[in-house]
Image 1 (cartoon, one colour):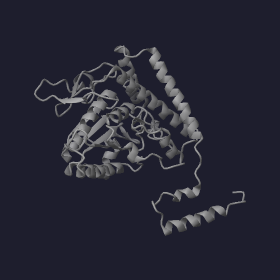
Image 2 (tube, helix red, strand yellow):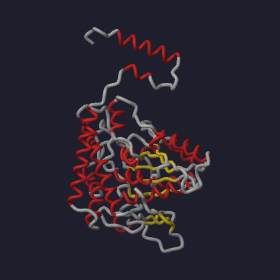
Image 3 (spheres, helix red, strand yellow):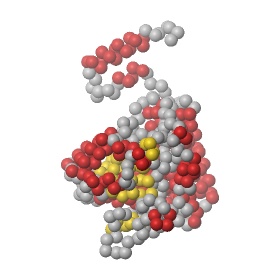
Image 4 (tube, helix red, strand yellow):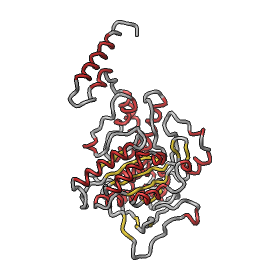
Length: 391
């Protein structure tokens, strides 16, 4: 999607209102689309940066299509797990705008380091959505080439990917691939709970000291599994960046337009050599942490209902309707496309071939090793011992 300039500096001019906190009780954040679907021309961040987007009508419709398709595919994966076809699934329900907005803000040369929940970013990078399902079905290790798609493999260990991203970004800087508009930037995704991990704080230190071209993108979905945000921090997460020597900003993570604008600006700053930054996407996990979790044990229904009123898809649909950018036929066509793609995804998952058990040795080392060969042989003999038995 070709995009206009998402952000310009507002220094030296009258700034737009920075927040709606005084009248709504909401936390201070960058917002370009209200929950009711009203468009805000520009919003000002804590450092005086003015954020805006300049999309064509087709690009606005494209963002809505992304949101709907990503949610439908995610829902199909959840259903597959409930039916025993996947071992586990981490749903992104409620976080689509943060992921689609930031995912579409990436330029082709930029590199992303995800957790295990960035299905929307994966989709925006052009990766076949069956790839993570093969991982969670246990038939492969993910399947995509990180170098081809500029999207690293899913990381299960909480916060570890921030160190990987920092090292990669330091390499980008040392290789001289920053300082120009066509330079490379890096983004690392993590949740609010990960900010309590040592890995994340160490990544903050190294990225800052070495001026790494890295955007730390925290999806604050209010819960680290069952632990609420107040058990993680006494101050807004984005303010932690100041202690490490780089800027931070909080964006409405249910607003796809603001998520795009803030991320694009941060990435462009990084590629120009201005170092790291932290984005806190203030959003909400509508479902369970994973399919092994029961969120009703630690949060109340009224809280979920309050966040449903801020749904990222509903507000984008309201905007398109109010601006007369889409009609009932368009919405019906998008819904049908989402349904068809979900059915097709289900069929493909069910047809994934089971791997041979001995294949787990194939990719441990690029050229093998005598020890690995011995283990493979021993395991093969073990499997052969079952031939002809009732086991």
